[in-house]
Amino acid sequence: MNKLSKSLAIAGITLGAGALTASASSHREAPAIAEDQYVDNTDVYAFISPNDATKLVIVADYVPLLLPTSGPNFYKFSDNARYEVHIDNTGDAVPDVGYRWTFTSHRKIGTTFLYNVGPVDSIDSPNLNVTQTYKLEKVNEKTGATQMIMNNVPVAPWNVGKRSFPDYEKVALQAVSTANGTTAFAGPRDEPFFVDLHVFDLLGVGGSHTTDGVNVMSLVLEVPIGEIASAGVRPAAGATTKDAVVGIYASASRPRVRLLRNNRSQDDYGGFVQVSRLGWPLINEVIIPLQDKDKYNRTSPRDDVSNFGAYILDPEVPKLLNLVLNAGCPATSAAGRTDIVGLLGPSGTKAADLLRINISQGQTNAMSHFPNGRALTDDVTDTLLTVACNNGGAISDKVDANDKPFTQTFPFLASPHSGNP
Amino acid sequence: MNRFLPVILLVAACGKAEHHAPPAPPAPPAPATPAPAALEHATQADLAQEIGDAERLGTWREVQHRWQGQTLRWTVTRQRVLCGSADDCNVAAFPVQRPAKQGWLPLLTFAAGQYDALARACSSQDPCEVSIEGTLSALEVSPELPTKVQLSNVRLVSAPAGRAQTAQR
Image (cartoon, rainbow over the protein chains, first blue to last red):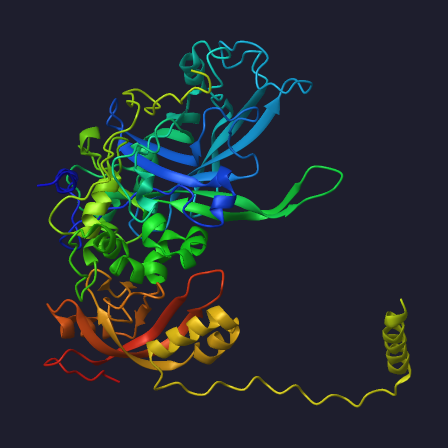
């Protein structure tokens, strides 16, 4: 039994069809979002907390492949965007509960080009010149009503270097905030996704650790499972109903209109328009073809089968694996890859690009492995390549782990690489 | 400047003439947009062809006008994982092994009792090729959003070989 089958069995997820699937994440995956880096959603993770099995951890990463030495204007979240995590708790692929982050940037001293004007030993240090705060709201996605979870929460600063941050992680962890039973973190972290990106050079994978040494902007939540469960009640152990599995995706949205002026800063108008979304790793990256990638980012998971189902039934990846690597992936059967569709709709839920995880009582962190949620350590590229090829063997990019170890305490992601180690 | 002068004068003259022109007779009522010809024999391949043409020619509105509201009879493939209930049913419009040029899978909503007829007809056969008839109630085609095809009031016309069945009307 391979590791994917094991995790499915442990999770108690029932498949609509027999076989398995795999893919990767979503860094610069579509033409339009590649031009708007700050709202490019790269990965979503979800797992039962290793420290409290009554809580679910959700990680949504944005702003891909960040060089640590990126001053003087170090990376941050966009003030003119909405960053959101959406949760379907009824199995219809329509979100019921959401969390929304809105950011505001601050500057203490305008007469310097420096991010910080001296060593920083705490998150409220007067030496930390450029800062960002956020508000976190819980959204009833059926009514649009919002509930403030926390406000004026500091974003962890960029890890500028050893002269600026003698003990960076001590300062960064001061950005962890708990309110109303929810713990949150926002800020730079080591890029947790590991892959050989030479895959995009005609599938030229061979073990190059191409995401080592780069950072990403992370949003991390730890919420009581009852807060996101249908009717606020965690399903009983062993439940096989649709509401035992929640489906999660992250998105970013921009205001509809941006007005640039010669004599003042830009203005933004209008409602928010979704410009990026992601549930499973690698769906938009390698399943959706170029002609539809931007369209995918504009649409909702509930329409994924209607809009993009033909690409899922007959994915391009196994053909490329055969063409380039002579991988021996069998031809797609007349039925198509219904196994992949089944994985996208476990336990009778509507198939969609949602990261599904069983939240019923008795689920533990050890059971949270892709595609039942996604742990930080999951090698989803290998899993998805193996499933896509479906030749009975394992397909690997030969990059099997992150460059930094993950932690067992919130926010679980590794400290970001320093700009001056 | 000289070369623009005739144009300016012409525009001015036209404007002046228009200003002094006698009132135009009342315009006849604008002809209603002609109803599109019935497409009862049109297949999903014809629709896909027109969508492909629209990508090149920008004829999105024309495609929608011609096709939306038409009653169509198509042969499609039902897979249980994609069409497991009357409330959640998509079918494959093209043979799967033909590389997909477009991503859409028609969304079906059924006339009363017709999903059950489909399920009975296909029984354990999966995938299951069937002929259906329905109204193309929603066709979303544009350069900016994915194509979406919805057939409503769908009735089963014929089932797989050996399970032939005519829709109850």
